[in-house]
Amino acid sequence: MTGLGQTGEDLARTCVEFVELLRRRGVPVGPAQTAAFQEALFLLGPPTAAELYWAGRAVLATDVAVLPVYTRAFAEFFGGGDGADALPASPPHPPPTVLDRDSESVARPAMDVAVGEELLELPEEARVIASEAERLREKSFARMTLEERRVAALLIRRLRVRLPRRLSRRRRAARTGRYLDMRATLRLSLATDGEPVQLGRRRRRIRQRPVTLVVDVSGSMTPYALALLRFGHALLHAGHRVEVFTVGVRLTRVTDALRHDSADRALALVGRQVADWDGGTRLATSLTRLLDQRRGHAALRGAFVIVSSDGLDRDDPALLGRASARLSRLAYRLVWLNPLKGDPRYQPLARGMAAALPHLDVFLPGHNVASLESLAAVIGGSGRARSRV
Image (cartoon, rainbow, N blue to C red; front, side, top):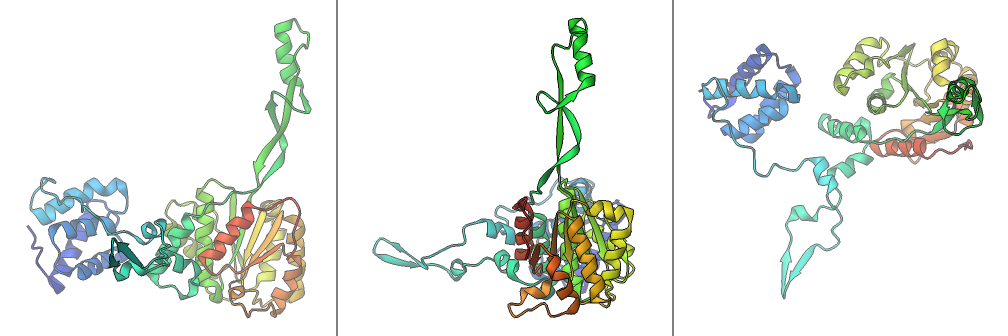
């Protein structure tokens, strides 16, 4: 059995050897997971067998399919056996996560509780009113730490968006409808010697409106672009019709890359596909190219178009104004997310933003989780009439 009482470099070396064993057994473990495992053990101090097992399971065995392999490897490496005969039991009371604490009641108007005639003072932890998740909802993506961005990613994934619906040009068979179905009528008349006693009917289908995301990936927009790409990934995997494009120096379609089940791996694929990430901005040229492409034109017509950019464009502002006007005429709604709008003192003085503003239906900040929740509410609560900013 490998010693569990090791500390310092010996324990770190043991962790690395255990990770190598998992990789040989087919468990995908990346460098970030290995570092997180070592950090967890450092925070735990000299770990017990139970702490070591559950820390590794939480960090290294993130896929349910690899749990049996992880269990056998742990028993073999740390227990000296071939099976899982003496595995640590499940912790009786696991510590609550940030999202678990957020789901509980956070409003505690009374700081002390009276028990009979005696005043019982609550511990300091019970005096916290605002949960960490609630605090992260209002924090800008640009100021979040790596751990806070992971929690924000979970909050974004939990967003629920109900897209508006529209009548399609295609028709379907129905019991009642305004359109006559000649084929169904002839088929039904076979049972009545050719007499059309019963008429077949058709009605127009009701389809969900598509969503098209246009994400600025220039240097000033990187943290906000990552958050909106996660939002697009959540929409795509919720079964909605979504198209995602990145704009910077050039236009890139990244919808297929976001189809990967894991959001982190999908973003890694996007990073390899987008050549102008963290570069300059030629927003007007990219939007014009999107409007001129056949695929882009089809993705924009009748869709809920969401543009995420700070409006700091190197192109001619008049060109951006014309592109925004074409987008507004073609789309069902044109929403613009500008993270600079999160500052109450912000005014759209940039020439590109000022040229696009008259053609927008909704103008939102898009700098934190709360603004994405507002975006989801705008999408779900949009009516038929277009409401200008």
